[in-house]
Length: 189
Image (cartoon, rainbow, N blue to C red; front, top):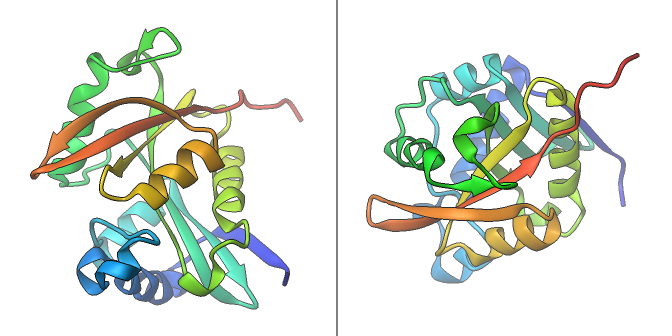
């Protein structure tokens, strides 16, 4: 396997992120391609810039090519997404570690996207670990959601990354699974 570099996205990376996003957006894929995972939504160039300026977008680079990306943003971020709004509304009723999800200082994980030619390279785990390391001490818990119609992604997050399924919600006619995971406290230098 080639060397992989994980780092935060810069403005110069936005076109590659948008390209990778379009290549994996559900409406641009055949039924067969969707079985390998898909993105349920697309961000505009302005939204990519805003997310990168918030908690950031972590990149996986292979030979200077953007092979994957993982977004992160604060719950207070002006996302404009009805799906995210529904997820955040569920935090009071959903429990993680015996407590309501709303009782934690949390952030939203995702979306994550890996280029088709780079799947099975361990990039998902690398992106996840890089993001957790960067956000350690800032948040107690990360929260993701995955469509029930995307079993490939659900399996990768639950079995591959050991995220905990804590509940679900419905939005725009789809059922989404809520996943949570702990972050380490900030280590002293």
